[in-house]
Image (cartoon, rainbow, N blue to C red; front, side, top):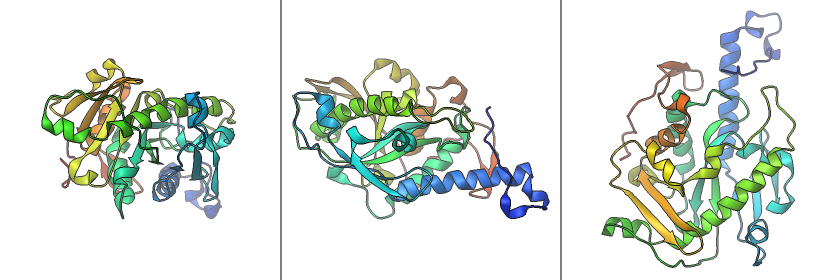
Length: 301
C-alpha cells in the first residue's frame, strides 16, 4: 500500500511524538476526517443551468457550483465551465458522487449521520492507492437542482418499484448532468499538480455509478444508479429491490435501493482488493477498533 505521508509534527519538536509513526498516523487520520467533515457539513451546491443549448455539454456546464475549497474553508463558486484544476480536488479519489435531489433534500443532522455511518463502513474497505491521503473517501455530497423535465416512461415489476421511480425525470436529468460533469472533472484533474503521494484522479467508479441520498435515508435506504449491466455482478445478493428505468434519450438505468453501508460495499467491490474488508483495525478519529461486517446500523434496513 502506498503510505500516507506523515510529516513530523511541529508541535512536538524534541519530543518522541515528533517522529512517532503511530502518533503521526493518528494525526493523518484526524486531518483526513476534518477535511471530510467540512465537505459534508457544507456540501457543494449546484444551480440550475443558465443556458438551454442544443449542446448538452454547454447546457450542463452553465450550472453554477458553490463549494468550499479542498483542505481549507475558503468559499468558492462559479460556473462549471470556468472552474480551475484545483477546484476539482474535492471530487478526486472519491468512489462516487452522492446526490441529494431537490424534491427530498436532506434535513437537519442528515449530513453528519451520512458522514459518520459512511466513514465506519468505508474505513475497513478503503482503497489501497490513497489510504487516508488526498481526500480519499467513499463519496462526496452534491446538492442537485434541475428543471422539472419529464421522461418517456419506466418499466418495473411491481407497485413498490413504480413508487420509487415516480421521479424518473429527475433521475434522468441527474444522469445527463453526471455524464458531462465527470468528463469535465477528469479534464480538470489532469492539470492538478501532484501531491506527495501522487497525481490526482477521478476514480473510474465515480463515472460509472452514482448514489442518491434523500430525506428519510436512515430508515428507507439510499439509491445506487448505474447504466452498465456488468455492475450487476457486484451486487452480490438477492436483488428484490432492483429495477430498471427506461428514458428515451438516456436508455436504460439500473436502480437499487439498499442501506448505505451495503451500497458502499457494492461500489468498493468493483476493486478486487476491496471485496473483502480488512480485519479489525484501530481508528484514531473514533478511538475504537473498526472492522468490515454486515451490521448496517440499527436504524437502517
